[in-house]
Amino acid sequence: SGAMTVKKGVWPRETNWSRLKLQTQIMSSERMKYMYSKVGGDDGEIHLQQEILIKARRKKVMFKVYVSILMVLSGTINTLATRWADTISAKGTNPKVEHMFIHPYIQTLAMFVGEASCLVVFQIIYYYHKLIKNDVNVSRFGAQRFSVFIFVIPAFCDVLGTSTMYVGLNLTQASSFQMLRGSVIIFTALFSVAFFGSKLQVFHWVGILTVVIGLVVVDLGDVIGDVIGESYSSDPLSVLTGDLLIVTAQIIAAIQMIVEQRFVQGYNIPPLQGVGWEGIFGFTIVGVSLIPMYFIPWHLPSAPDFWQDHTRFEDAIDGFHQLFYIPTLTVAIFGTIVSIAFFNFAGLSVAKEENALTRMILDTVRTLFIWLLGLIIAWQEFNFYQPIGFALLLTGTCIFYNVVFAPILKKLHIWPYFCGVPDGQSYSS
Image (tube, rainbow, N blue to C red):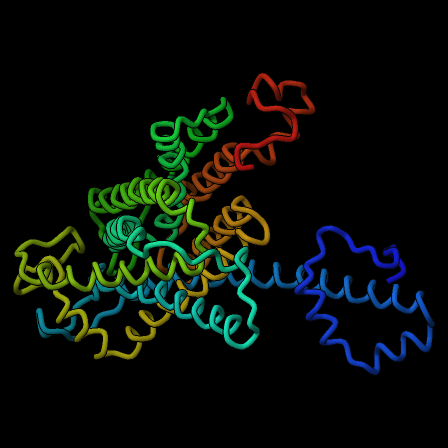
């Protein structure tokens, strides 16, 4: 503790007073008596303040490490659990014989159950502080003056985008699914220019171009490379269709971000509460939509063998029958629900404690884990296109967010020409 200097009665500006108060409560009276008797007087108070501050900072660092690990693990589990459900066969009602679980809208419903659980967690925390601690901090919980219906349009976009991604996931690999989701930065940037008048610098366009090349390489690997497992289509056109559906879903996701930025951000709504309300509305939209979907005599592209006796857009009765027929399928869907809840919590915590860039980097690490695990459990065969495409996607993302390469360009004295941004400033800031 001697490495820090804290003057009597003077605390650093960044000190979190509530955290220090908690640390003071945790510290036992015996410990405090010991420090005062050992050091004595004002010096004892100074050393006590130093120890409290060090413990608070150490605890904050460990929290950042834990939520970062949680984000990567829960995100990896979420994608793999969803893909695992696609590979499981079980008896249903349409037909009654065993067939694969190809129900992207039921999987979407499960995801919204996980998101809605975030609202439950938020309400527990909120009322604990309100009723027990009698301390509802506006900076933490917001003013709570907003109409919940502002989340209807973002939830509708989320429904459309997520269900489209899950349809695409039926046709391609989990690793490609995750890599292709990186295309969202392209459409988000373009929509920001179109709707908010944002100005993209040269390095933004270079990053976007690099991401596009990476997407082409990944898709090329899917079409040319060998894909194994009964759930994957051997038809290159079907694989290409799946990849295009995933990219299309990113366009919808970008629209969702623009809508949220336009209508939601100004209300100072806690992220956990916002995700929860989107989950509530998303669950409602999908749940109601399953009724007319059952009677629509058409089905999206889903598998090489079309197994339905009676063609339905989404046969929810068959899906739920399968879901409760075989325990492994129940576990897979439950894994999707739990993992998306933890992933949202961890992602929001990372964005709050660090920044959106850190969250993006961790999401990239998740992509690497999904690819490696897909190889280990033999869901796909190795082809050299994917690591090349992944490297290009990562490089393009780093260029777009003005990191990694910026110091090199600055050192070569071509920084101002390349990006047109003053030293020390980045697009993400």
